[in-house]
Length: 109
Image (cartoon, rainbow, N blue to C red; front, top):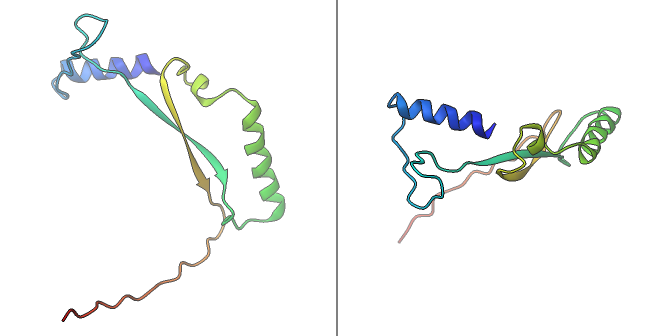
């Protein structure tokens, strides 16, 4: 993945779609593309989820199984890259209605 993105960036620089990104402090001479950081999202079942109990168990089992498989970083070949894992809530089913508040502007004296 890292090599693929680097090739895309090189092509975009060559075609003038992106400006060159010369690196001032690097061990690789004539390097015109910097390093990449990748963000991978990891889902956590939200307490706001409103689905049938049997469906909820299935989703919870899938999320539990993810703990025992390879990491998404290894799936995409990012073992040696800078990878951040961002946990996001997984909300399924009907959502509770959001309460609306009517705000009044205070008149200043």
